[in-house]
Length: 87
Image 1 (cartoon, rainbow, N blue to C red):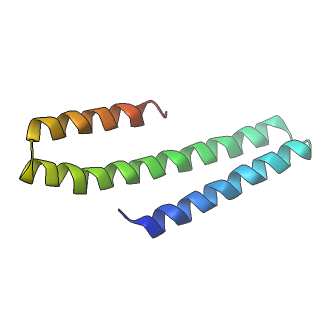
Image 2: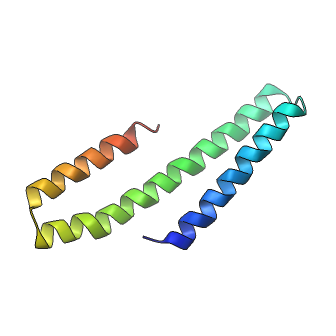
């Protein structure tokens, strides 16, 4: 998994969340706050996609090649289910 990329993205998201928190204190219009919330949500979704892709490229690939393919596929289906709940 591309840890430096994920850490960079997560730090950006943390910055977005801190900015949203500050916007609330500064009585920024709700529409502007909601736009920023949606941007943070989209950024988190992208992090999830990267993690899921890493899982597929490493864990699933190795599990199918060297382990129990049925168990690996079932675990991947479970990971997709968890990810799809984020939306």
